[in-house]
Length: 85
Image (cartoon, rainbow, N blue to C red; front, side, top):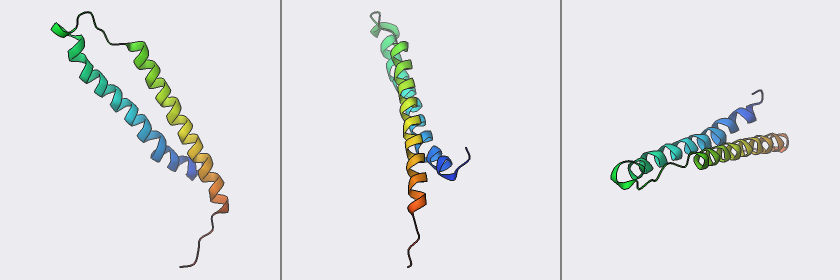
């Protein structure tokens, strides 16, 4: 990561979106585990392929938003000029 716009957008866009994805997956696992184990199960299991696909999609979306934010920051930085107070 060389440019400040990329670093800032990484920490403000990519990391929060990735953390939200991981927290959501952990919450799903925590909430669904009692329903897939014990007397409630009736043969229910976790759908690991679907969860993996959702997590991969969320990471791809986070990467896209990060790159889009970095591009927008770099593009606007060239036009921005400070104004007198």
